[in-house]
Length: 322
Ligand SMILES: C[S@@+](CC[C@H](N)C(=O)[O-])C[C@H]1O[C@@H](n2cnc3c(N)ncnc32)[C@H](O)[C@@H]1O
Image (cartoon, rainbow, N blue to C red):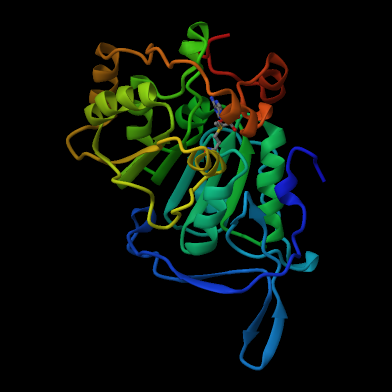
């Protein structure tokens, strides 16, 4: 057990079982109609009493339940196959694909995989250490519709995602990089959005959120150049306490969180998006000072990427600032 992750202690604590109806509009998907049972107590199923092991992070349950080891799955994609991904080969079926870039500990994506068994999911993060939490959780839930891989988001979007193959791309709390010298590391640039346009299928949607207002102001100007963009009014209906670890922390600290989503536009294809990207400003805004408490809570290991961790994943694209 890692001391930095006290929320991983006490899997088997008792609590009441609650039934929560999930809003069908959640995650932008009418298919999401299931009701979610959360709780870690004994649940009555017919005449049987079954022990449910539910995990919480900052008091907020993580979807699914921890199964007996015999039912665990393997969700780590340890080596990228050559070239672009073959989704059919990866998941053994054809299903809408959901990608989370900078997925951190995987909370959002695991929830989506638990609730939307008819979708397949790929989580990507630079840091192998955070992915270990994500894969462990997904394995323990026996999920077959999710994989996690270490990688650099821009490289993955440009080189790994087949054009027109992804139904949803999610990007929650990309680092704002408060030190102006690090501004060129910011993930969401016009060029990055052009590549997102390329990856999305005709019904595809890009979801983004941040607790940094200057980043949000930039996104509100730039994203509509590529996608039919809307700000999400208020919290996501499927996760009022936060879809991700960072969102939960920000909400607990009383920070506003800015959320939005943009659908693919039939009139903007990759070539046009790329041309447009060349004329738009990069994310060189002043991100303001960091909130020390927020950053401390969010754990030093979420922060950018020391040289050591960059080297760990390797394969940085040529335009990645070094
Ligand atoms: C602030 S955390 C947010 C994590 C998670 N999305 C959440 O909301 O809790 C940012 C995450 O993005 C990852 N990250 C930063 N730059 C990245 C990049 N270029 N490619 C992939 N992951 C990146 C970090 O390692 C970190 O896990």
